[in-house]
Length: 141
Ligand code: CA
Image (cartoon, rainbow, N blue to C red):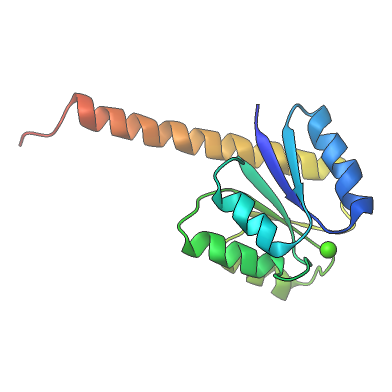
């Protein structure tokens, strides 16, 4: 069970996407502007952020940059109508983990959400193992 933070100001996209994520078994928190998205992302309640690039007050790129400069490792799937190569690169450089262009296929977006959640769960598990190994067998050489 994961909590997905969905940042999208277009209700025509946010509503069906939110329902689809809930059908997949996720809790969904919807935000429709940059500052409230950043605040919720930093609060640590979410396991994944689906982040629209075009948000009012603070765009998705800036949200992502600020999140990363605050050392957040929250997985970010960026969503955008601008599909050229430059935007893709800028988005990834800002700290996004993956990228979906609008219009997107719902099935593809949900698959990318699953993949990111799997990857971050595996990363947390590996980190936990490293920590417990350090505790159990400290190096004495
Ligand atoms: Ca938008």
